Length: 67
Image 1: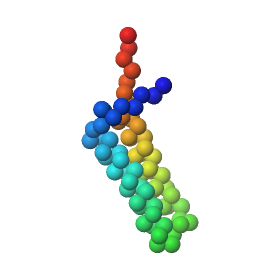
Image 2 (image 1 turned 45 degrees about the vertical axis):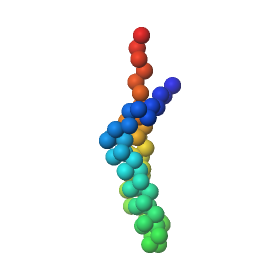
Image 3 (image 1 turned 180 degrees about the horizontal axis):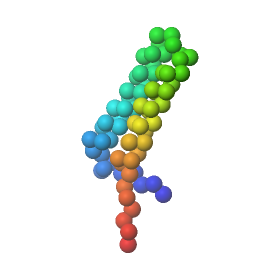
């Protein structure tokens, strides 16, 4: 089971959340200019959003204690 703990909130979590927000804002900004079907937009958005999600999950992950 994955344990997520907000006590592990750090600068890496903030950077990851900024990547996530940047990906979403980038997609909406370029999409609003009428270029919804450009594959390059999807490629850049996927990199930003996935790195933001995975970075946030990894930075908040709490390692289980071994007994």
